[in-house]
Length: 440
Image 1 (cartoon, one colour):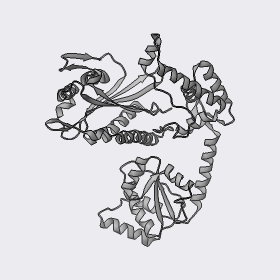
Image 2: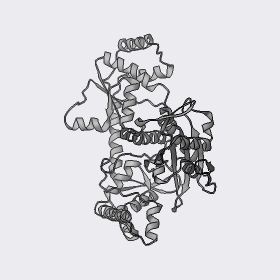
Image 3: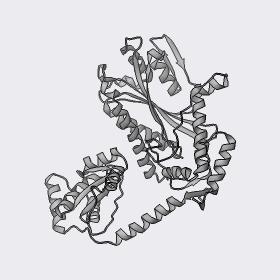
Image 4: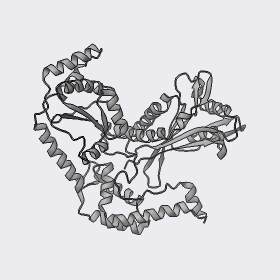
């Protein structure tokens, strides 16, 4: 199952860190540290499948050399407790091929960091876990100072804003889910907390190698004890209400395998005995639906709730497709096209076909196209036609970022689906027969 993880931290001299050493470790390379007058050699480290320095405009070309870049970073900082770099780490879906995972990380780093003016040292690791499954993830070391052809300038305080980290967390989830959909992979990630997702389980502490070694050495680890206590409590919840497991899994993917279920239960139970009990209870649940074997010969399952949701959506889609209530007269279409042409925007034959398709009389229409093919521009013209014909037009998307992009690209006032549902639950902003709802 695709796992969401996105974290950020600062690499600082106050913690005894060296930017050159950190870069050498993450890239599995040997770099000479001019400040410390020593070399850091991590060439024996395995699992690094892609390593690249990405630079913003006007940055010195010699910074493509990782050793030169991070030595220049060290030289720009005088204080003994200086902050040297920000490191961002995020999980890449193991369902993706390695090349797709690298492209996913690279596109995100360029758009969210480099295009803001940051130097970025990207390293993609494709490690294998003890269970034999891949644990692909990326480490990105980011510069903290503005750059020019002359080198580093002042530190950019705006990059430290909490709001920006919140944006990056949501943006990564949207970026991953968009690419999973384009690759036709039945999986999704969610940046929200378990509580926000409506999953009745307690979040667990992330336990790294250091905490595990403390226990092995006979030392106390409060954090690890709490981790196990939460896992045990979650296991009890699953024993009492196995549907929680099914709801949580199908929140990420509509169908799943025995391995997917086992991974989820392992994460939310304590010890083999409780794991076996929870697996047995969930597998015996009347809410579990066995679908048969997939193309790989593995048993595949879904939940009764998911099946009923899909069947309900299918029935409602057929009903909407049969309705003929939202036609836009030709004079309004022509007027919208003429106005667009006056602004210098002429729809391509594909855009024109999509425009005519969504402004016909059907109760539901869909348009599929890759990013950059002009869907938003076409929707902007459709918005004018709908308004001219007397319809109110609303936009919606799963995430706030997607809603913002929809609004900026098309001019359609947009918000998240969750926000719309909340308003409808309060009997506000209800749709009528004169409403058009555009969902990205």
